[in-house]
Length: 130
Image (cartoon, rainbow, N blue to C red; front, side):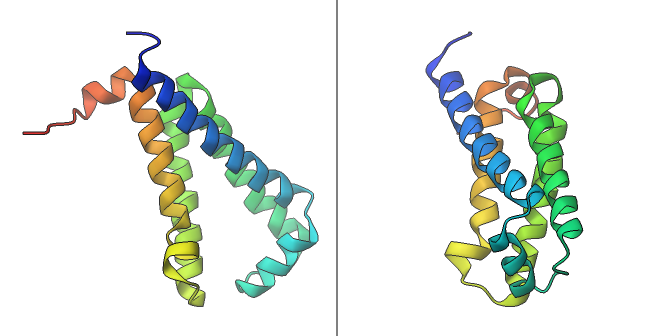
């Protein structure tokens, strides 16, 4: 059923995730001063090359997620990327709800959006309310 409210919501959710992840990846490719400063605070090397490498990983998973034929692979790779972010914030002792779980929020929106827009994924993992 094309154009259903759920499918439109799924595309909107996925669009928000893609927009955020594109922004995140692009500022790492430049890399902006805030990226280098944050890398230092998180205990990562402050080389622009490291920021670009991390940015490319995020952008690659995002682009795969954005295209329907590769969206499932992109979601899996993005989940790994976001898991790394969660682990990093946990390791340095950042606040739980604003920093540590932020990657989980993005991941839940990404998977929720994919679930709503992809009938094959819904058939593979049916939601059972009983």
